[in-house]
Amino acid sequence: MDSRFYITTPIYYVNDRPHIGHAYTTFAADALARWRRARDENVLFTTGVDENSQKTVDAAAKTGEDLRAYTDRLAELWESTWKQLGISNTDFIRTTEDRHTAVVNDIWTRIDAAGDLYRSRYEGWYCKGHEAFLSEDELTPDGLCPDHRVKPELVSEENYFFRLSKYRQPLLDFYAAHADFVAPANRFREVAAFVEAGLEDISFSRERKEGRAEWGIPVPGDSHQAIYVWADALVNYISAIGLEGWEEHPADVHAVGKDILRFHAVIWPAMLMSAGLPLPGQVIANGFLTVDGVKMSKSLGNGVDPLDLAARYGGGAAGIDAVRYFLLREVPYGQDGDFSEAKMKERYNGDLANGLGNFAARVLALAEKETAARGFLAPPISGADREFANVLADLERAVDAKMGELRFHDALASVWAAIAFGDRYVNEKKAWEIADDAARNETLFNLVTLLSGIATVLVPFLPGTAQKIAYAIERSGDGTLKARKIEALFPRMAQ
Ligand code: MSP
Image (cartoon, rainbow, N blue to C red; front, side):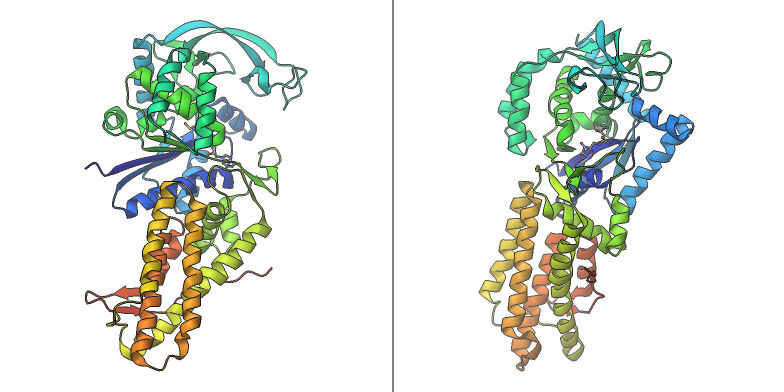
């Protein structure tokens, strides 16, 4: 059986620093990657940066840095941010790498050979401030650039066009045969309706002239044109594993934000059909995060830096897990959500410090005492407490089912229900004052088993915390357990 699993994040533009919106998409993909790995799948998980954009040129010009030096610096910033956040990606793609350029050339050549590229005149509104074309619907009602408040220039140039219109029916047929191709389902309906309404061919290149499209990958055989940044960027998913790798096993999941779903669920599959290559298994789209109800934007400077945020919640693995927890617990996947310090603190103190942290501390402290007195905790002879055994088995099943449906928030709610059960169990049994050795041993054995099971299902969500708990519990070949106390997992934060 092919146990490979290939998952990707978008490749992010280097005109900006990573904020929690980007981190949200990356954490969701990371949770899925870790979940698959825990099921012994051989996971390939890629992320990276999209460099061949006019935005890069503009951003570099603003800093006054050399374009190359700027791009290298930003690529390094993105890569090291993911590393510091503990993202388990197995590769990092830059679109200025040779391995990428080579595959982009191959794909372009295949699409061309299929007869799907033709030259035509492109007319559009060119905004000098943006150094980019704006579509009619991006303009204000009186025809101005919404950011620069000036009337863009009507530019007309020859470009290569991709025959997207030809793929309307093949796409609809493909969607009909793959009911899970886009998730959540409501987004799939939107995509299908969009395609149903008819597709227009799209400009797939830009004329290279001074100040515009000098940067980017030249069209094979026509150095006067640069490949349109999206036609270049989407190919990164193949560059990471090579054409043969993709033919053998294309991506299972592309995790993206809802803003770029059409590129992934319409244009990308059409490009692959044209190039005669297999299609990805699924495109999943998260909703958008606001901060205190306001859209994060570079000009407002209200983007929350995920590393700063983690540092404010204790730093290290605990701080990172707190951020991951908040994002995956607070926002049902696919829906828009809002971040605020107040909500984050509430989740942190309520769910992490008082919930998981307190439960782990209690169980491990009691178990350590027992381990110190008797050497170990023995499995109960009487046969485990039925209710207790069911809780753990149900939890594992529930988490698996909910992960499969991308209901991260629900999977976490199930884990917290098991923690609440554990808390009740400690209190009802009065685990700290049971006089009978066998009964006390059994209760503590059960509690440590529950905590260990909770840590296991938390691996995709709170990897650092799960590891700390796992390290505190030692299981021997004969089924006995030893446990030791650990430092507070999530020290309570002042209100
Ligand atoms: N470079 C393209 C993607 C090319 S993929 C072949 C791009 N880059 S981006 O830097 O703008 O990042 C877009 C992605 O970041 C979104 O699709 C989304 O996944 C994530 N997010 C950016 N801001 C976000 C929020 N405010 N909220 C949630 N996700 C956000 O588009």
